[in-house]
Length: 412
Image 1 (tube, rainbow, N blue to C red):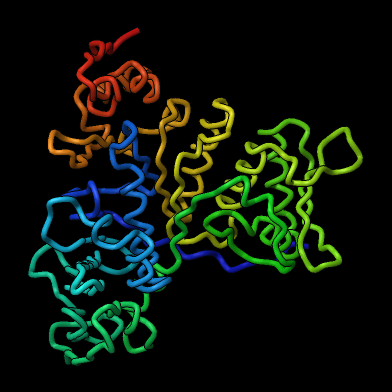
Image 2: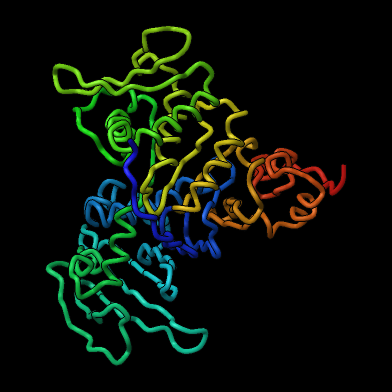
């Protein structure tokens, strides 16, 4: 029997991302982000760096600024070469029923240690008027306004932090008197920026159900165990979809062993005995991991997927892209890709084309804003085909090396 759950609330949405001085992202903005956004571009164009900007912000909240900074080899590798300014990440996001909120974080290195140079939260309630900053900190010193709907007339409380490497949102977001700060903290700490690995999924973790897939997917067996106990109907649905994608697959089993670990096994027809996950194909394990993540009954508010085409048959990618878009009704997804098959299921407004300019810095443009793309799509063209024909210009690796693209064809 499947347990009933309350209807999930509408998800918060990131509408805008601004990044400065983060590796090749000298100064990049992504406006009007869609619930499902895909980054496209040549190798080295900055797709993975944008992906890591989200991961860095999530790490700052989940691990702390110092660990997030150190794991990326500090300023010498993290900051844009030749830049003297701080690393800046700014997002605008909207919670249902609330004004658009802007979160700004500026971080730099001082005497070998990272510090929060500036951090603030602001919103603008109407179409007119000055935005109201209800949290404002510099180097651990600042103030915040309490309340569900903080107002300019409310008292600003001076609340110093213990050290300059602490994030004010992370610290104050743990207190009930700062509900809007707490909402942002909960939002970002819930992000799932995945680096799924088939090898990690083959492991034998300690037994015990877990609700959410880890970044690497090394707890896949634990999540299968959780779904089998709490959401068996949903797990059966995942098995049906997996069987449609990978012929002969019937089900996946997570069996506890005597030593307290979980053994992941895959049952395929017509054989009576399942095989161990360690002998399953990379593609089978990756597809299973994606389905478990996308069909999550309580998905994270933001999911990042890097190059979903790896190890998957090209014909599966269009359907996977469609499943990502369906999942984006309950969460927000960001993916990077090189696959024309994945692109063929996408709309131009969902795709951002990235390239490096003559100075080596990343630039980005929405595919729907590129000349001729909308006309091509109106005549029945597919975005992946357009990309393979070299019609996305700076997003084509051959164009990057000075080779001409073919002229745009708007009819067939």
